[in-house]
Image (cartoon, rainbow, N blue to C red; front, side):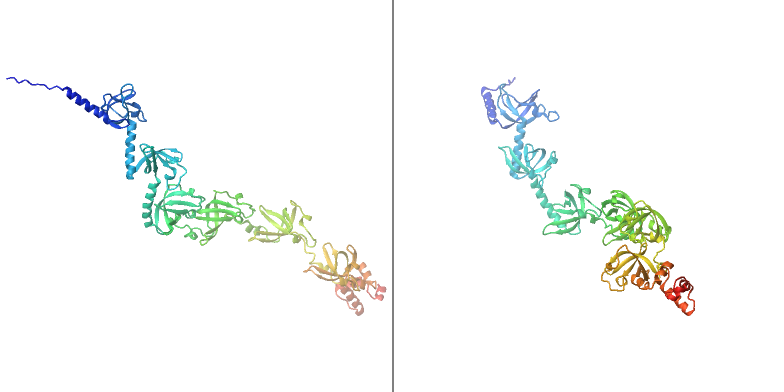
Length: 592
């Protein structure tokens, strides 16, 4: 028995139902809404996508091409698209993949803004008032919201990726405002709590250099900043913090002082290493030769760094034994390595005195051997001052002839009256003061002091010629020989009382005077016109003076006269003088 199988074909009602279902589906998708579609074909300019409409939709191919020129879609892929228009002139739907993606991003961002969640994005470029951030769509990051503190250099953030907090969201206007500062403040508050727990004087903690100023560096310790002053950065010399640190450096610091009330922290960096002055007296005993670097020049010397934290001063007076240094730059230069000698060290005051000249022997100590006192030398005058002349002895060493050592008798107002720079003179070494570096010379000492022999040449009673050189209220000064003056007191000018010496003598007049006394130590000679006149009244003194050439003494005359009366001979000199000179007695004069 054969069974006949009957085949069922769709009826008109079935087609109508399918058409109605399809048209209903089309009604569900409106313009500017997202729908799901399947890639049918990838053409030269467009990608065809089936979204269930009676005709395919098309999307510009450029929406699928990345920056490298590669296309990221294939036939059969299912993608989300946005229906821009149902049909164009060709009868196809106009779709957009980019707009669909953006709408999905806006939906995600809206959800995160509602839930106060963070978003991540890349800063793309700088715009007016801040930065533009790509978080899937363009968002604005104000300059005040970039860091905890306003920063001027916003360009350095371009290309960096951060997490942000949404502080303003308006989907209709397409406006999203972000903040990074809000996150940093929150993180800082949490870090600060942890940091405050371990902050105490003497603690050593890690930090990041946050800012540099002329006076120091601010270090982020974790939610709280501390100041590292420039004086606490190094035991050595630091001109500016940038010599040691850069912003962003991770360093270890020591807490020197912490105030919980004000939350102020003072930090130290050099305190992590020992103080170089500890044991310095053992490393730098007085007299040791050391090498150091010239780090600074001042008017009165140069500072030399012996090691980090220890600097010594070479005073300008310790740079040369003989040269007169006007400025230390004539001898050393900044940055130069010099050899010097430790002269003194004070660890309490942290001071070291150094010398360069002590590297060589002191030439002044050799002068005593070369030029003992009394040595005669020849030298050229290098300088003339009010108080004397400087004579060159050796290179850099001058001897001083004081104005008082130029002449025994001549009154010199200024050495330039007798000498000129460059003239060669002979002098005698009087004294060498090695400690004070003084070389004393004398010119007058080349001859004997005439005052030493004056008592023999001008004994009391001798009659001499004198010229009046100066008149005062108490008498007149008269020169008995070149450079030697004596005083004729007003009482020795005449027998009668004189009120004014000018009544009796005048400057330039020549007079015969009697020597009353001579004091070579005080360099004084007392003269008398009155005595000469009184003894010449008889005429014998005048005759004696002319014949004897004014060399006999009154005492010798008296001795001679006494010898004639007694018949006794006096001393050899006295008898000779008496015989050569006429007696004051008239009978003696007749015999003569």
